[in-house]
Image 1 (cartoon, each protein chain N blue to C red):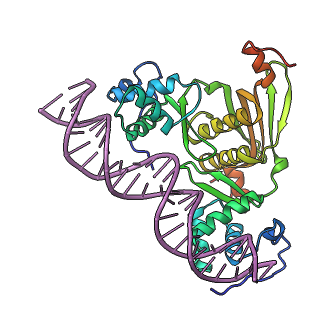
Image 2 (tube, rainbow over the protein chains, first blue to last red):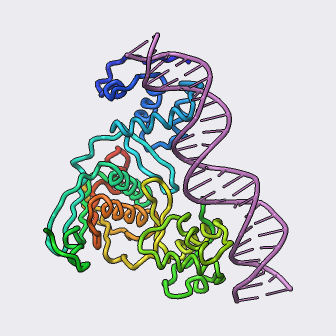
Length: 164
Length: 164
DNA sequence: GTAATTGCAAATAATTTGCGTTACG
DNA sequence: CGTAACGCAAATTATTTGCAATTAC
């Protein structure tokens, strides 16, 4: 139960909790540290196991709540492993490195969509991880070109009326 | 954990059960019919609900087992929804329409990986579905170019020795 | 006939929630 | 000090498994 937070000047954005308007507590700090120190995605139970070593008595519910909070704050990335559990790691700024482009095969409209956000980012990260595991390839950048029908053209093709 | 038993990926004509060396039973047929008649991904509990209407008394375990079997037979595609449940629909032959290419940024080695199989296919389908839901765009074809480091070059970069 | 398959119920597994207590700010 | 956050345990949700009865072939 020792090991209060040492205030070493890490240089990183320390204190994302306070920034987000939340309290900085020992359990939260411990969870963040564990995920920061890991060099791979961690499942909640593994985070719990590791946090427990330095903060005996912490509850697993707190781990879940903290992982969720940190994900909402944008500090952590979440993916879903192939067997369905959620995995977390610190979100680096990969925004510019991964691009998703939608091209309509009918009107040729081209649209870029943000690749790191929400469910899309989740699926992309899961994808990269699968590639890295199954094909021994470290993904650094990517370009995803999806072609198909935009909403307008889809409506036309289905017999509806074209855009207003 | 699922996974035991190796099954052949047979074509998905009629009677995939017999083709795969399994018995054709009423519950299995009903599950297959329901998924075939659906025009969207279905979760197991929804399949169960629909099957129950035409085959009162069927157990949900059978639905799970059949969905798993049909997926292993290659008849169904499986994706993981954003909230973690498995979703199923008939697998159409999209193999040629979606390509994944790995390009090593160091040795320029280029490798195509099969896009429809296993966990990779699962993540891609989840991705397409998210795009379709969140961006009103129907994905028909895709090209995914991932660049990074192949295993050999990754070893080199880490200070290890190159390929044996 | 016999082994695969079923339905049921209990078992897992991952995650969430209710609640009285603790402690951050 | 007030209330956000905690730990615990019970609840939920999705899926799996053991087993005796059933049924396809």
